[in-house]
Image 1 (cartoon, rainbow, N blue to C red):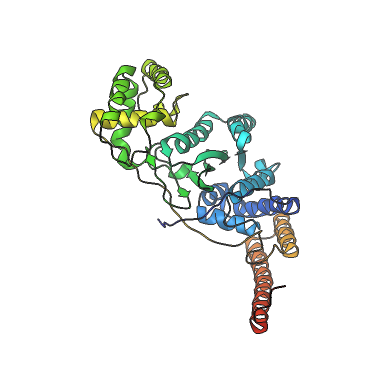
Image 2: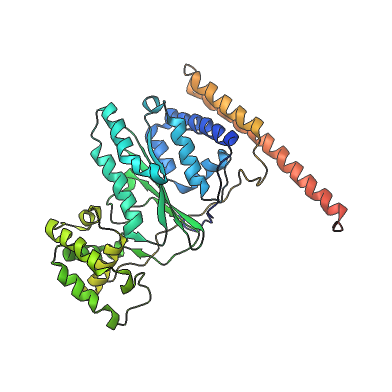
Length: 382
């Protein structure tokens, strides 16, 4: 497993219409080729790989270093897949803001057409969002959730949170094939700008805390509330990402009455309950440490690093001629389904060679300009 950091500053504005329309077409053609060559599940695997996802955004011509690469790339792919879902075997739901809340309905609508049970997929969508909004408390609030799945039951999630204090974003990747448990090291990857103070209830080290939280949730509310009342008099370590002032006793008691009545059998069931959010889990984790002596993990699960260029002119502006030719070549290759695989591979290699020559010419032009500036020397200010 490779590790590192990635800067994803929050950028305002939208992708220009001339670029986004091309991103939609190119995203569709690239996805069609991957699905044709390797199968639809391979598309999910690549989307869950942060290195590939970032490179995909660069190929589509977007900023390599902004938070917008997540929302714009998934939006372009979702739009590009529209109308081709049955052919490619890949379905997409969710998006940014209010659109993300429509994900369960979108999944259900597709599943009704496919005559498959939507419940496992809806559960996966909701639990992945619940984990990253409540069980991993790293200071980033989710605002984007994209869900991709295949009729065979495979799925992946790409979702993102923002931190208003530091103006940065953090991206969370999930892949069904790698999820052994929703509440124990479930992520394929988390991309972030730096380590953050974190309460990580899905870390393997938090196993005992998860069990104790579920046990406390089955107890009468007074057990937890009485333990929390003692917190101001305890010398607690600084690593705790919660203060007693964060806990609203009245609200907490109402939630604990609900958990007591429903008696969740384990932490995953507790996490999935309506009304159980970040503050409830922090309170239970604190009470768990006071009562059972089992501190929750504060290990930040973020990992992975990458860097490329894109829309903002780095290393050079988007070459519209090359971009459009790429879409045309890929579209032609897909349309000619009767040619054998070797011919399609040759066509793709020719496309790569064409793209390399264009990039080389652009880079040489940049170098020549820099060299000429060096020869001219510094200019006097106007």
